[in-house]
Structure formats: C-alpha cells, structure tokens
Length: 295
Ligand code: NAP
Image (cartoon, rainbow, N blue to C red; front, side, top):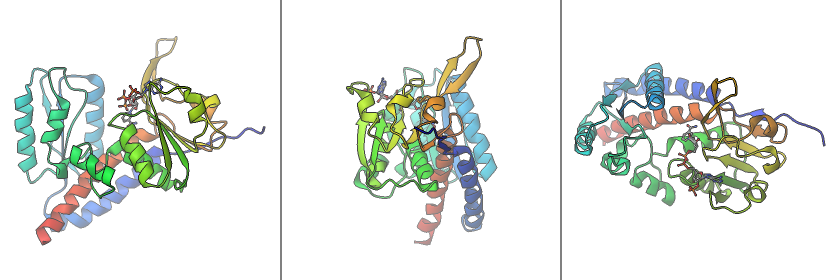
C-alpha cells in the first residue's frame, strides 16, 4: 500500500484569519456602539497553566481590539464573593463576555458560578441555556473548542453530511457539545468514552475521528481508517527522557500522518481555534447590543 502524508488542518493560520475578520467587524461596529467589545476572564488562585491561558486570551483580545476586564482573585476567595463579581459584570455595559477560567480551587463550585453568568454574556457557550439551544438546534453562543473544530472542518471543505463521525470523549466542555454540532451538521455520530468496549473497532469506522480524551497518544495508526480526517483536541504535557517537557495530543501524530487524509497538529491545531471562537463569541454578543439598541 502506498504511503501518504496527511494534510494539516492548520488551526493557527485559520485563527489568524479569524482575528483579521474580527478586526474588520469591530471597526464597523464600534462607531455605532461607541465603545470596543469587552471580555472579562475571572481567575482564582495561581495555577501556572491557567495563568498562561489567561495571558494568551488577553493578548488575543488586544490584537483584535477587545478590551480585557480580567480579574485575578486569591485562592481563598469565596463563592459568594465571586458570585457578586459576576453579577456586577452581568450589569456592566462595557462587558460583552464573561468566563471563569478552570480549574478552580476545590472549595468553589464552578457549575454554580457558570449558572450566574447571563446567557447572553456566556462567552464560553457552556451555560445550560446555550447548551440547551445547541440541543434544540437554535442559534446561541456555542462552546468554543467544539465550535473551533467545526470551523476548521468547514474551512478545509471537509464534507460532514452523511459521514461517520466518532467522538472519543464525552465531557461537557468538548465531547458532548461537539457530538451535537456534528449531528446538527448531519453526520452519523458515535460517542466513545472510558467504558467503551473495543475502542479500536469503533475508531476504525470513522470518516471523521475526534479525540478529546486527555491521554497522550491514545489513538495510534492501527485505530484509524485510511483517509480518515483526524482532529486531535488533546493537550497533554509529557516529559521526555532528557527531562524536557513538551505538549502532545491524544493521537500519535507521526504514525497517523501516514494513514489519515487530514490531521490537526498539537500545538497549532484546535488550541488557537478555541481562543478564536472565544473572541468571536464576544464580538457576536457585542454586535447584538447594536440590534437591541435599534429595536
Ligand atoms: P475530561 O473532562 O477529562 O474528559 C475526558 C473524556 O475522555 C471523558 O469522557 C472520559 O470518559 C474519556 N476517556 C478517558 N479515558 C479514556 C479511554 N481510555 N478511552 C476512551 N475514552 C476515555 O477532558 P476534556 O476537558 O474533555 O479534555 C480532553 C482533552 O482535551 C484534554 O487533553 C484537554 O487538555 C484538551 N482540551 C483542549 C482544548 C483545546 O483548546 N485544544 C480545550 C479543552 C480541552 P468518561 O466520561 O467515561 O470518564
């Protein structure tokens, strides 16, 4: 069998393109609204990975012209204090998107906090109202990582209708909403998880295989159908024998590259798309403030 090299689904390049589109959109909206769009990211404690993610989001906001209203709280902050801040941000006319950076210290209830965010400002698309709209197929703010995956597939004109899509992972953050988005796009969808028997037999069936597990290189070439489209959502930090750490996904990129038709790199695949979709959700909420003022 002749070998092939899968084409890259370049999330970094597409995210840069989306940033440019957002710059244009904001420049058209800002004269009507009289202020830039605003995003507030709430972080509690000093998790270094979270701090890096928040910095990334802030940089991306600055690049496209979204004002950041980020707040950093000490790890002892109480649930009630955070709920008060969210209520204030809900009322703040300068803020179009609010998100709570996870994970939170153990004494805090992240779901209860999420419920406090106004669905119209739920930039992460994880509020039950927005997830409910996704289930019903109604327009609403969509979860960023799954929306980023769908946008990547669309950008590369990858047909979804009638295709077998297998999503490995069923988290509320990625797997479940992504399965619903693929269903909305008329794929025939299977969701696999930690109790799935014979994962390989299932993944082998996929025209579109999504790995959202959090297990370094769980998916190898033997588990992938020839010409499948492989999307790797996983971000795992591994330490090599030389003591250096690096990021790897949930799929074994090197081996699958010779089997798949398309593949996302890690880093540079889904990660930048997640941030791009966060910015897009913020601008989408912002644009609705024009509509509501003109009503
Ligand atoms: P999660 O909440 O831990 O969920 C992992 C899912 O994988 C669960 O549904 C679990 O099944 C399933 N699973 C675990 N081991 C399995 C196995 N051996 N076989 C099949 N399924 C298995 O993780 P998550 O938040 O969805 O994140 C998944 C990965 O994506 C992580 O690496 C995370 O860092 C990454 N991520 C990346 C981005 C991005 O922007 N690129 C965004 C979010 C997350 P059960 O439900 O049965 O436990």
